[in-house]
Length: 445
Image 1 (cartoon, rainbow, N blue to C red):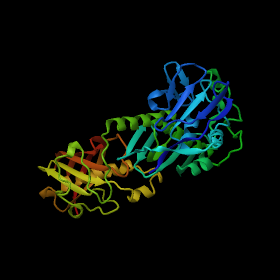
Image 2: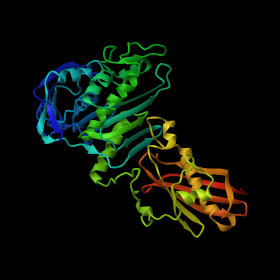
Image 3: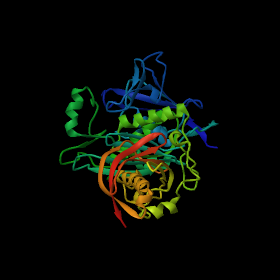
């Protein structure tokens, strides 16, 4: 059984705060089992302890800031990342100002400070947050997905409209060794045109080329430690933000164009999931599929049409046959189909490798295939083929990832001898993930 960990003895580090510009000192101290990570403002007597918990989040203005009432600690993400990276569960962090020292803009100074003492096991089991199903967050062009996993892995893609940054992608399984070598040295970064604005906002008073990578229009003003240092720092930040969950996480995090606001929003979503305790096991290949309440009355083990019978009606074949079963057809007017999405799908090999999201166009195609079965099962259409004439009113509402079970509904609106108008909807659990309206032309084979 893996045990919780803390420090053997206190260790300290001092320096300038990035945004305040003030000299500040932090001291890491041992803490009893089940304490978690707690900050203590020793410059404010009787201020109490501030747990590194998403419930104590204040804002994410150029960093992750926590507090209780008027007592605050700013830009805690690099400290939390270092503690998470080394696997430290319990620690008191005394600080004599409202912001820790920035060091060189990475987590390395905190790692080197913590390594001056030993990390010791405690007489209590380590309590992981483990997922039972995929969880996802989408806001604009930002997405974060957490997949059930046996360890903690982060796959991240960042995209900037700048010729010196562009897009970067990296993926790491987080262990103490990997964190120290591959992620801890990666420094925070900014664009030189941002500096004047930050200073007008009262920020970045302690910023310099010694504690941040500054990107100009044509040059990067520092020597990079890694060719992809920017995306590595994004992963470093994410690890720190995710430690606001209050416990270590076992999951594969897949993130695109994320930052502090989306990171903490996702942590809040995980916390809500934990508090509700309503997560259901995700469907895995070879296991029986879970059902949402909407489709609870259907017997998944006794479908109306299995994959072999579907192939007798549709001309599609793997990998372009995207329907596993037809569960029900109601009076030739409504059909319900099903697809289990697994990581072995052919399209995941080429569609955003490392970021397994089912392509939207294939969701449309899958809805259309269920609609095609609905039309072609009518006796008068036996032996015909259904071709698209138009696709209208397409909406994508949520992402679909490996482990999801998609239920499709196709409903016939109009039908003539040669055409049919059908609506299609796709659901994962009780959530509508996509919908569209299809006009088909029916032709002889």
